[in-house]
Amino acid sequence: MASLSIHSKKHKVAVVGSGNWGTTIAKVVAENVQAHSDLFEQEIQMWVYEEDYQIPKDSKHYDAGSALSTKPQKLTQLINGLHENVKYLPGIALPKNIVANPDVADTVKGSTILIFNLPHQFIGRVCDGLRGKVIPYARGISCIKGVSVSDQGCELFSESIGKKLNIYCGALSGANIANEVALEKWCETTIAYDPPAMDSKQPTPAGSPSASSADLPSLQKSESKSMKLAALPAEYPPLNHANVRTLFHRPYFHVRMVKDVAGVSLGGALKNIVALAAGFVDGLGWGDNAKSAVIRIGILEEVKFGMQFFSHTCRSETFTEESCGVADIITSCSGGRNFRCAKMAVKEGKPIGEIEERELNGQKLQGTSTAYEVHSFLKAMAMEKEFPLFEAVYNILEGNNKPEDIPKLVEAHSTDDV
Image (cartoon, rainbow, N blue to C red; front, side, top):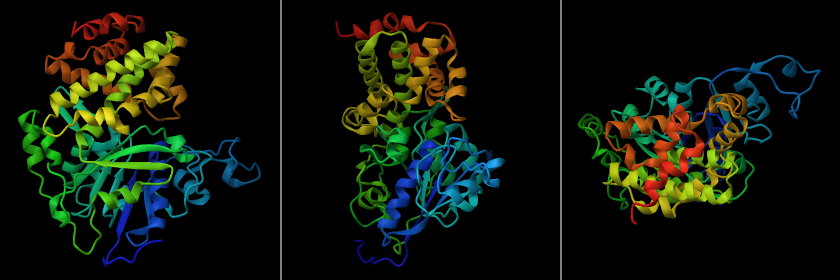
């Protein structure tokens, strides 16, 4: 039972993104705002990239005699009318307090909690469109599994979102295949949220989101330091670990709260590269031993990357103890989309981009883009040889090597301590 709130205002929550994972997270938080009406307003606005969509004949909503089924309809109208994202999360009933909105600025209007869950290539454009349209004291959670990496530097998506909108943004990542979560099959996730001290009188973890930029180029450090956050007014319930957990925790979706935003973000990003490697060796028919070797090396390279480039805030334990680390690698190397598409590419002898287009219903692989970005960054840092598995995946994607070459490409890594 919800307790009586001592605060005069409640948090309004918006979800920016409505793909497979975005819609699933919207379902989770929509259920929780209903269960905790003392903390949250009841309506969840969800931004949907508007498109026309034809209800497929195998949908339970298809009716040959209905005008709704005989021609394409606006996706937002279908979601709001059927309470199901028939394109990106078909077959899953959504809570009726989710409202699909094609206008991203209207979606976030008045919201104090913004949940970002969209393909990472759209983050910059979407955030640019939201400048000046977000409540100054809003707080964000990025559910985007990736990092913005180039030869210019390495930046967490939570940081880039935070800097563009001048708000604090944490991160959510874990061993969370969207369809399994949507079907309410039990799993865990990790949320990194290091609340600004100004938001609560309660003790808050040390450190700041900008600290993870300490080892990166000076331009990036100066941009991080330019952020001036507005305090969350006392009229709202504090956004401490307990209340953030309340927004996301469900009986089937267990949440562990940490403060390591860098580690959680990197785990969600780099595991996609490892999953491609696992898919390559599985596609060759090499079995579980080979896949386990890839996972072991991948975990080591994740830890090394985090401690090398985000040493001021990143904890090695995040990769080995939390769902966003080793658990996410195991899941991603068993049934995730990067693993599946890489495996199909090898078995069918086709480019992975062709498999992606055929299998993902318009969604994109994160592993391929992350592999290229990480390579560009490592090359600029002259550290390619320090991360042989990441480099092996890049070279296979480029056609410089074949999947069969993975053992010799990572052999130096395996003999470092001999």
